Amino acid sequence: MKKSRPLILITNDDGISAPGLRALIAVMAKIGEIVVVAPDNPQSAMGHAITINSTLYLNKISKDGDPFIEYSCSGTPVDCVKLAVNEILKRKPDLCVSGVNHGSNSSINVIYSGTMSAAVEAGIEGIPAIGFSLLDYDWNANFDAIKSFIRKIALEVLEEGLPEGVLLNVNFPKLKEEDIKGIRICRQAKALWVEKFDKRKTPQGRDYYWLAGEFVNQDKGVDTDEWALENGYISVVPVQFDLTAHHAIQQLNTWKWNE
Image (tube, rainbow, N blue to C red; front, side, top):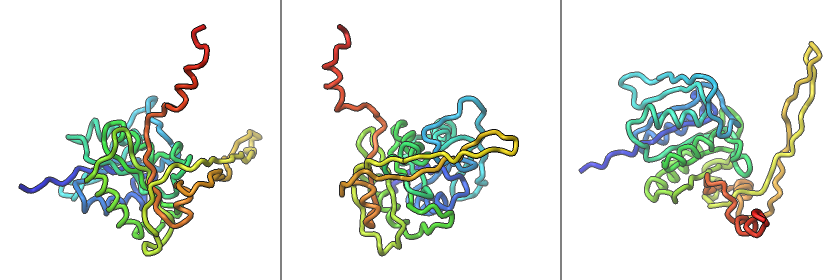
């Protein structure tokens, strides 16, 4: 009996026309049956935002006879996953992949990332999920160099599954395929953005601001995603959406809460 191909949901935060999304589609189409639901315009750094105060629209881009189903969505990356699961897909997908993001989502960037939040939402729905990002902000970045690695990682997840409540944050260094040293399982580096605001005035005299800043890696460990990327490796960080600080429960239970 012929085994059915896995159903794969594809989304991103750079928008439906992003080359990174097209690269991901090209890889996943060779692995399984794919459905694409992505924002109709860039939604970078939207985090886990959802649309609650305005209407949402889906525009079916694919035509009858096309090799896969494709929609653009007026909402956020998380909206895309919610609509796909609840309104478009006839069954729960075997895998959700988000990206490939134009730019890194390593370290603290995972908190702000629309790419990763879409994957997190899939994980909340019980779908094995992976967020892919390339450390290259150029719209015309070379995604061909990482396609074989995307395929390998996706196939491993389909074959092995993921621990309950866990998804993967995968970041690729900006290197030629032959220069990538391999894949490393990492922890999230302790780093942050040191931010500043460029204050200006409109012609009418009203103040406005441009956000700027510098990314500072405070972590000297050799087991982090930042170290891996700096040293030519693909970083794979297992991420959980349970934000409970379990290590702090015992200490907090020593406080005099009820006295």
